[in-house]
Image 1 (cartoon, rainbow, N blue to C red):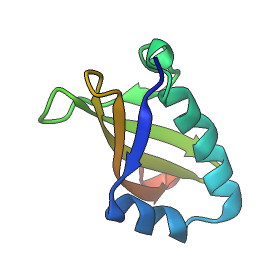
Image 2: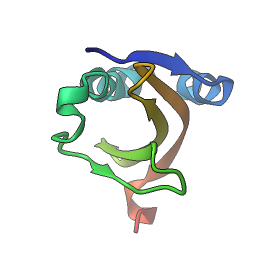
Image 3: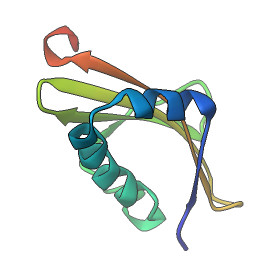
Length: 93
């Protein structure tokens, strides 16, 4: 079973501000996330959020970390990309 991606307007607006090489690097990780079998084995940190069905990816690329908030509904086979933040690595704690 593959998850169907859905995007909020907030995510799309953030995504469109990224350079093409940033989009390409992040896209490769998001492709993995769409496969539920690999969700638990991704070599990425998933932070626990207030709601159990939500997670946050921390992707390192170049001099930045990209934090992407997502929600998963396995019953409906949906992955909703909610939003993202780009931070210089020097400010990441």
